[in-house]
Image 1 (cartoon, one colour):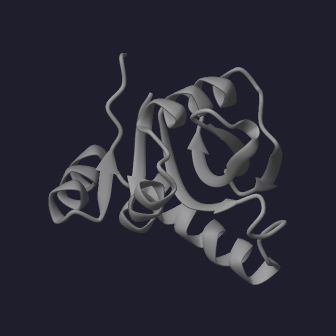
Image 2 (tube, one colour; image 1 turned 135 degrees about the vertical axis):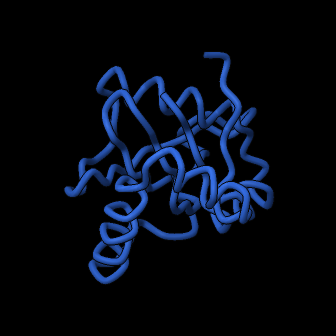
Length: 124
């Protein structure tokens, strides 16, 4: 399973001090069926714990997920910041998910080289 962050999501994780290890744990949970909401179109909402605060004090992420292949973290927000995303945002995220999940390995390499995606290092 390959895990990626969009450039914007990466900037947000830096601000929130959300470690890549927490993203890997979240993907493991997704693989095991632990999601917060299936928003349709391969888009999932997943709570992610922040170090020292757990999931209750953590953040919410919106991911594009393709079973056993790849996961793209596209958007995130703090629980106290907002309750959910709007329908307009969801529509845009579904379009982005469709595009991201359609990329083949060669296209992903090109986008990684452009800096628009960041690959999360995993232990396997």
